[in-house]
Length: 79
Image (cartoon, helix red, strand yellow):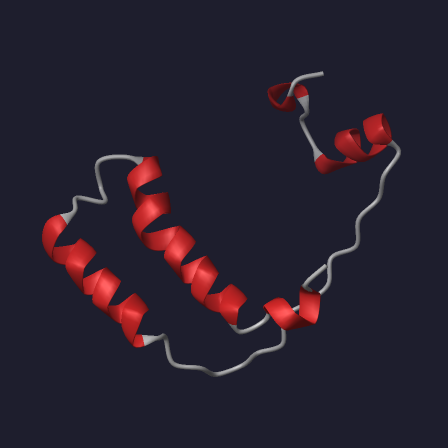
């Protein structure tokens, strides 16, 4: 079955015999973004059109933010 054939999470769970539980696994932690992230955002804002595609937004906005958050939590969840 292809991913696009699934219509709900329940259908996926039934097909693969799995279950999931929603929890808040990250605690609220206040932290300032690194200088590097701020510099990259400023550079991207001035030089890269992130509105041209979803891939561009992902590469230049979403992934850097997720990486920054991961840096503050990876020791808690590393395998």
